[in-house]
Amino acid sequence: MHLKNNFFQKIHWIFKRLSVISINELLFRLKERIDILLMYFQFKCINNNSKTREYSFIQSSKKVLPSYKWLTISNSNKLKLIEGKIPMFGSEWFWSRPDSSKSWRTAPENNNIWPDYFFDRVEFRQGNSIGDIRIAWESSRLQHLIALALIATSDKNGKEKNQATRTYCDDILSWKDQNPKFCGIHYVSSMECALRIIALSISFDIIRNHLDSNKKNIGKAVSAIITEHASFIIRRMSLHSSAGNHVLAESTGLIIAGLIFSEHPSSKNWFSFGLKVFESEIDRQINKSGFGIEGASKYLIQIIEYSILCSSILKKFNIDVPLKISSALSRGLQQVNMLYNILNVYPEVGDSDSGFAVSFLFNEVFSKIYTSSTFIQNSHLLAIGDPKHPLSLVFCNGSLGMPPTYGHGHAHALSIQLYNNGFPILSDPGTYSYTGEPKWREYFRSTKAHNTLNINGKDQSQQELLFMWSKPYNCSNILFKKYKNFYICISQHDGYSDLGISHKRMFIFNPSQGLYVKDWLITATKYTAELCWNINKPIINKNIIISKSSSLNFEIINSSLNSSESSNFQIKDGWHSPRYNKKYRIKRITSLIDSESEASYASLFTLSGVDIRWYDKALKFALRQIKSN
Image (cartoon, rainbow, N blue to C red; front, side, top):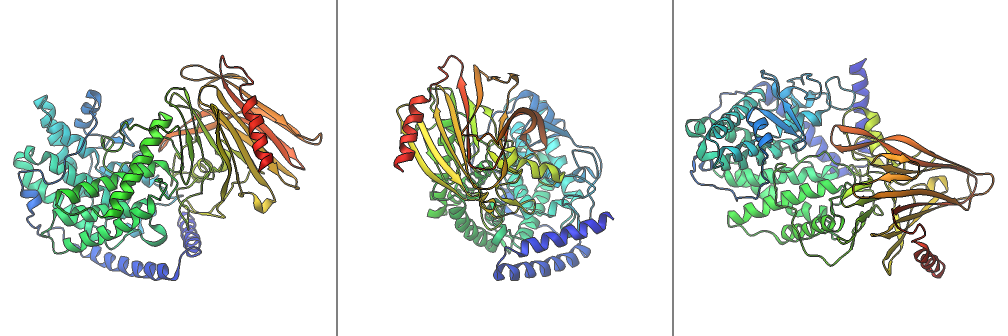
């Protein structure tokens, strides 16, 4: 029965994807299937005793790659790393990898063992019997090797350095031994192979002169893995409708492999193809507003990191950085740092797998930049804040994501996040899981999980596959003005146009006082509307929410409701996911309205000690603006 269900799931996936691809992509996919068949024959005939070439990158006694800035490793994290524990999704969760011949195929969340089949025959999608493949991929990105290399080359504690070097060597040799070419889950994704190229090349370059007698064996293992991975990636690039952040990782891997293993007969092809794809894609994926086209804020950081790697390595090898790359990097860095400085935190918008392009220690993206701006508007969101005042805000009034699949977007049109000194009070739900239980993937990217209004329990767009939406919503911005110390914004979206309903939202925001939100539903049909607010702090009672530095009063005000309508104000349980594979319960304040006509209602959040009618003058100004428009 399980195999039968998996078969039908695969057929369903194929038909859904066929509905959005072009003829050119269809031909590309057919060629890809033929190539996978050839790989299978190679897999059956692999000779693992093949001779490894000598490469100057391995033999050199000097650093070949650029030097980067790294965060300091805490003493507690050092001890965990040298003991062989692997940080998962940052440094919050350290996995104690089992000491066995199957350790790199062990599912960290449940200790199940992923099979050692040919990669294309591994069943990894939702409903498989093993676990969430993304969790298993995390440790095999080998990004912890960079942390071990940094410990091994530090000026302190000789015992720690020796232990770090030993763990570094053991992990590389065991990974290579347990993961032959084309075998198992770690060849399912070309992106995962590219991330290993990045981690292995950078970590080896750091530790090369501290390996002593191990250098030859480790050098052979590193060169074998990287060259095999590069040969694999160029045959399985994530192109056409799959060309999101994955293809930038893959291109980066090819660029690095092509430059540092120049003696390999395919090196020039790796480099030239990788650079060509990267140049084209980065200019598209970091759009003119400086935000990522996928609409996912954490993936924007990753593609910026790929750009930093490519630019710095090209310069190190005395190769001119293409203008498209340098320009995209510049506008992406400006966007990220302005968001961080305006909000006093980097926001969570859209999907996030809590992953890194290089390492959780990589410290090349965020910097304190001077900005006179107190707001920033890009293709996906509006952010408002002021370092002099406690409150800041994110308003999702942009597009769903990158067509044609919109894979990393969430149905969060007109949702609001509110921060108090960088701490989320009205919070985005996060992502939690990609290929775990279907109900969680569906929930965390749904409209009902976000701080917006859902109609009849439906999403603003239609969920299709794990990374696919149809019927994408469109947002249109009607008004955005600053009036005295207030920011006034009015936007609407068409996500419920098939129901004959239009949702319009206005907010008035003062960073030193509070947030006033008014929602209108314009319709002539019967509906049930639910307004939701995710409260990421304990609720003392229905009116008081405790923030880090002060209390925040909360109130939902219903207005313009006919007698036939009813409003149900409730505090319910909801979910928040601060990182991949972690979730905890939070409170959700909801207001449920059954209506047969147009309706409007308002929500008010006010810092304690502030006049509850602080927004009156701004509201009168906003209403005059609406009439004049």
